[in-house]
Length: 126
Ligand code: FES
Image (tube, rainbow, N blue to C red):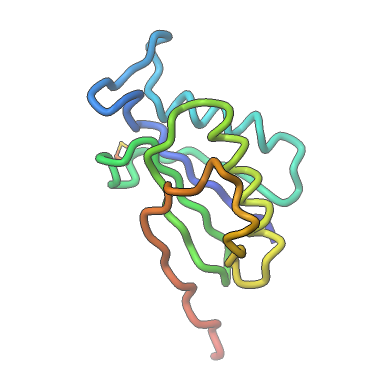
């Protein structure tokens, strides 16, 4: 099973600034950095998505996998350190049966960025 990071590609570069110096949104920059960080990983994939409806907490990222808890994180800087922390956390998430990762294992770069979590739907028993 692969953990998927869903990265908002339309988030602001900074709280009141849509685009950075290169003309890209903060989300576009973070998407590119996450895609680079997951390259070659069998445990983690990424995808881009427009607005995850957490615009006040740019840059926003969801983490999900079938049968596992879903996390929404935000307030990331569009920088390589954030992308690498997200991918490191996603790999730990992938290795966990439920998606829950013990706090002591969390990369420093994700601490303080969690917005919400959603439990998985029950397995279909039909
Ligand atoms: S623009 Fe990224 S959450 Fe709305």
